[in-house]
Length: 129
Image (cartoon, rainbow, N blue to C red; front, side):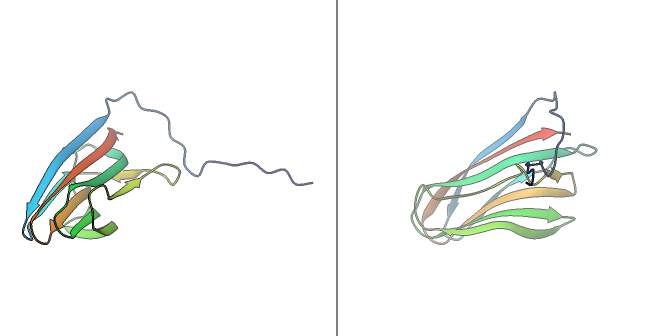
């Protein structure tokens, strides 16, 4: 007989800091882009627990990106072509360890429209380490 159990990959104590909530209603017109950077003040580190982009108003394909920006170099973490209202992309740090952001290494949410007006709601939940 083999005993089996589930062991968390990463464990950290709960913090007592006030949660950080960042939101933005991003509206893009005819190929424009809009972003929301999750970037703490100098000297602070935040743990990002959840980030989401939800397409609210749709007129043409909208490109949605969640990127990790490392000293100016953007790396796509999640990307999708959203083709209708109600579609979304998201990332979460549950179970696999935290997504830690600093002043120079941070998370960027971005939408880029093609034609017409596209509106997306962006939300990020984080906490100070």
